[in-house]
Length: 322
Ligand SMILES: Nc1ncnc2c1ncn2[C@@H]1O[C@H](COP(=O)(O)OP(=O)(O)OP(=O)(O)O)[C@@H](O)[C@H]1O
Ligand SMILES: [Mg+2]
Image (cartoon, rainbow, N blue to C red; front, side, top):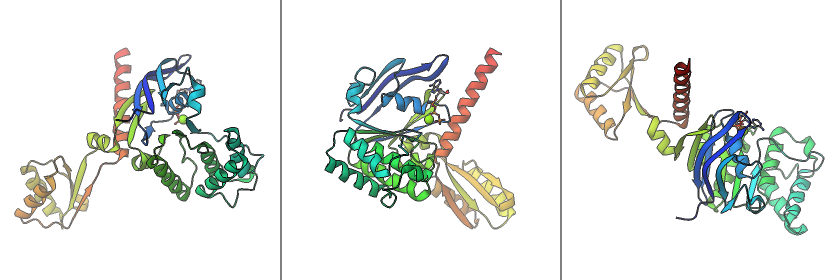
């Protein structure tokens, strides 16, 4: 196994009385996209800021590319790129000048900076606006410029804090392609997002934060398999057939849930062979299937279930202390 690019152990951060992160541990390897999910205030930005050396942990340790973030920030910064939740573009300069400036600060020659700026302006579809002041950019264009700035150095580890907020669907899809390409080329990417679809599409691994704690982690597939349920939905010609189907399926050991209004039955699928079993049972009972669809669980299901569990736990604690 290659050495992890990010190693976090028992990480905590408090701001006075506010415990923003508690006992967070994780590892991220080269070329891996880690999706960090969680409600507003869950601790996503706090985690990213510590890893990007913008703030210091109050407990635990974090290493990026082998360097402890609290003690060797200057080494860490040579390996990382970052786009924060709030843009850090200089409005008084053109898009190109913003990129050139950062490239030059990072030690590129004039020619190298020029080439890199051109490359990124093309990737982010900003060539036409390149020589206009950033103050004249739309919100989405500024966001794209900000992302381009974060990617200038071609870093080993890239932190993207809610990168697609405010992007239109076309820009978002462009960003996704770019993230996929960077990861394929070996860049480690930590991406916080409110869009579960984005995490599902891009992330190889996910951590879900709630109240500063990791409440779930794993591959999107594992998280979905652990919580979400594959469900078959079968439609029948009339309510009578629907009633009959409920009996037949119950007898076959399934737990059908009927909606007689639309003559449909939903059946949770626990085992891979359940669909064959379902079709055989209905067919041998002479029941005509008008339509059969199978719904896979989504990360939304996982997220909703986790949030509900966290709320129930909080309610229990309140109940106990009341
Ligand atoms: N500088 C600060 N001083 C005091 N409290 C802070 C500070 N920064 C963050 N917090 C608190 O820490 C907690 C985690 O905040 P954080 O910004 O990490 O959340 P987040 O998951 O990024 O939320 P969002 O989705 O809104 O961006 C919140 O309760 C927040 O109020
Ligand atoms: Mg945040």
